[in-house]
Image 1 (spheres, rainbow, N blue to C red):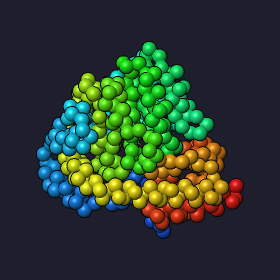
Image 2: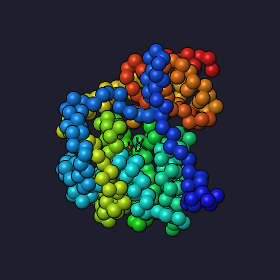
Image 3: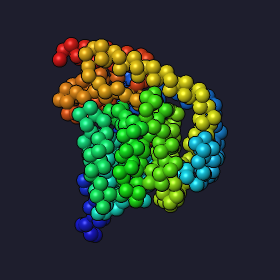
Image 4: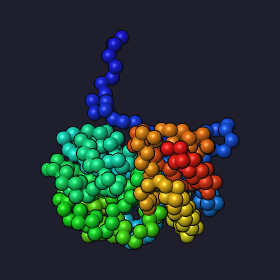
Length: 359
Ligand SMILES: *Cc1c(COP(=O)(O)O)cnc(C)c1O
């Protein structure tokens, strides 16, 4: 018998593992999960029913081309069906975009800190991550990102609003940046939190994509639409990028439950966006309370807020957990807390107030 283990690609060695938000503790008194930017509302009745109905046929493969969902999305955004590509969450689509553009020797640029999936999917492809630090105000430094472009650059992620800081880039600066990017470099506008934006100066990526063939827009049903557990997201992109996404998709990746629930969600959009409105009110309340307590926090356009706590991060995360709310610490840097149920937000605010006084 051979002593050697199977040969694995060397690129896998340095890849960080994705750290999911901790689940809420079970068995304790109250426990709220504010660690994964999930929607705290349970599935809408009509949406749940459509998923349950689809479950009755899960002995069959799903519609591989997601025909119904793609048609619905194309209609909604006023784009050709050929420009819509679905995937297993927008993380799945983001990975396909990297696979489609970058391999060993190529470079992928993104801000840092930003979404933790970017380094992972870049390194899986064998490409080199080029991380451009956020400004001191925790905003994308688009000038520095444009300066970082080389002839090896294949893809640039712009996370707007940025996870985990909640900060945004606005129309004029984003357009100026896009004008500087060579037309053969793909810019991916990751708009996972689009529906939570209230700043009118933040552009809609779908408008920017229309006359820019090197721009792709990523959206998801996981956050505002509350389908995180079903794994469905999509990109809007010109050919040949959209065609590349159809080639790199795992066959039958998006389940029929997910497809049908996504269509039902689009049809229940008024109600779902009403829930988003309530979460945006809660975001304002949490932000203003933190500022009143004395904290300096960036204004967020997403369903979470960021606190740059540095060395105090772990202690504050532990205090939150003790109080019954699980948050998402980034050791030594800061902490992201999702806007959740009112009671959960209150528990968090009480903890923050007490912690600030002890500092
Ligand atoms: C949550 C999130 C996603 C979406 O994840 P899904 O795979 O669609 O669940 C994408 N990008 C960012 C920045 C996110 O925070």
